[in-house]
Length: 345
Image (tube, rainbow, N blue to C red; front, side, top):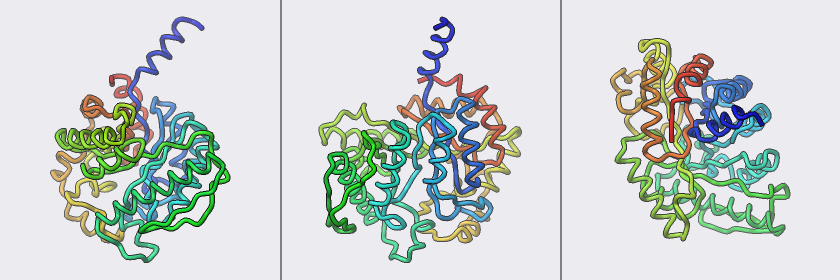
């Protein structure tokens, strides 16, 4: 191997893991797949794809089925692939999520991870069930994780399993297609109590951008839960999904934020809003100053580099980056050239 090739590979392996967040609310499936492939060409190292039945606002305009898109993206890329995030609680029985995840992991060994969350009414109310308060949604999510883990473990051992719980029933069965190694399960949360439960039960944590002290508390509780379960917190990845707005001018970056991602400036929980048309009514109240402290809106690549570096310095192992505008190709080129190479662990 030529010396420069070895040096280049060592440098690449030392770079932070900055993946591409494919927002299926904004881009048709074929375009999302093409963008994931282009992102990898520009130095992004994995793909997180959102799982929505509806977009946040009508302007966003799409809501492709995440499992189809991840499969196609995996064919076009070589990095990791995962859901950011799936709610295995209302639209899906957890057994179906386990089957989808195991199948993807069988097709692309070592690349797939399963990101799960407690869900939003926007996507989950469509099946007509009662939409409960947050504590019940979180309890449902953790029971769903229990069902998925049971299926993974029993299927890997070649035996059937069943489950009778508060929210879910599984009659005796197994996953007949199972990878040699079960995909890791990561729980998405911004709450410290859920983070502690996640540390006790799953393989990693996903969260969104927040003030330093809130991130520190989340990490502390996640590590506490891991230690309570006899696990090393350092072995469990901490993952960030980060929304930003970059464009060639500050003015265009703000227009993109207001037009395409006003939900990023809404200073309240969004889990109970049921329709994109409700969101667009709320979005009419969003002002440019509402993005301050919630989402970086800037044309300056160096400002974005510092923003990303701050989160790496806080201890995130992976970041999946979403630029909220339609200018994805320009964003990928600029960040691949001017931002990613200047980041450090």
